[in-house]
Amino acid sequence: MIWNSAASLLGPASALTLPDVEANGRAFLWAGVTTALDVGGDLDSLAALQRREREGRWLGPRFAYSGPHLTAEGGYP
Image (cartoon, rainbow, N blue to C red):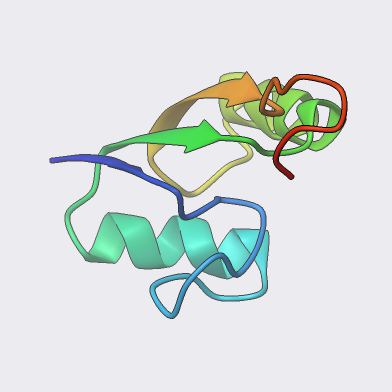
């Protein structure tokens, strides 16, 4: 199963996520999510998490990320 929504691996974007990134990873796996896409998350934190995944120190789904949203100056948000 692939999870692709506004919910972030890093924090509580909705009631579907928990405030702890380790708990988020386990919760996604236990729900059957094997691949996740984080859109709009913090690049440094996600890059560090991806390093942990590559080193085998992350108990969670495989994931990709896109970084922060791009908006025009003075645009939303």
